[in-house]
Length: 427
Image (cartoon, rainbow, N blue to C red; front, side, top):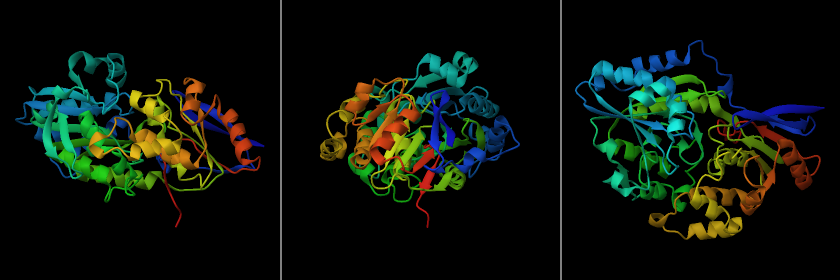
């Protein structure tokens, strides 16, 4: 008998069929089972009406003329169609004449297109609100605010400095080197210059034993992010938790650190799962929008790594509908063997960090120990091979390849959405 498991893939799913005698476990976050009687709008409204460690947004907006709301770009599933209208209404409740700018935090990603903005925000906001897109490679857009704990120079978008009230919105999930997303991450890397983002993502920072999923204490990347957000005086955040359907199941608003900490506690409780070791581990980036390119895919691959033992085979389902995702990443990931890539990157000083090098660094670490099969119907398979990965067009084809590598009796662990799971070793 075969068990059929749906794996998120782009805007739909792909099925994998695993013999029951091979299937060791299917790992899913409890979050996807979390139920609430409230609507998404009700949850967000409730959070805004009951801020944590902060006055209400309408109170903060009084007397504030220039207001900036930092939101995520096209690679994130922030439900801005729900959150932004409520935040805008709160701000205008406190100050009807406020000059509001919505700043899209791209980090080092490509600019968000007008079409993507309409999809993310809706026509009403695009047609009637002031929207700016962070452009990390335009030095004239940034101001040097000083030095971060790591020694990195903090260059941030001028719009965040020149405003009277700075607000951030986003969602929280486990993050494979920042510990958790959300909160302070809207500022760094969201609206920082390439130099600041690169140094925050340096080889040394990524290689730290504290730069791991679920770890915030002593995490050098997290510490820089918090300091950056405090230096530009983020006065209010709105963060949400999402289920597998990208629907809001919880929300927190208020102080940068206090509201984020409550959100992190919820995510930790509902996403933490014991790691179960398999000879073959199958996962995905949770589908669209995070599986648009290969550059984003290490997030789930790092979860699979925690369950793949010493030499398990990892099957990653990632559409790559938008291609590789970065020119520097594309060059670095093809420059040699995993060992050669790591050796090259490890010799680069922090202040000379190459954009996107964190991604091939993490891949090199994982590919050093694990064969990886990439399931993609969009990315050229010859290109996949040049990236030290094995291409496949379907999960079942990938599973057959994995059996050839590990034997027909190999145990299989499936993590349908690897981004939402915080895999921890059982005590």
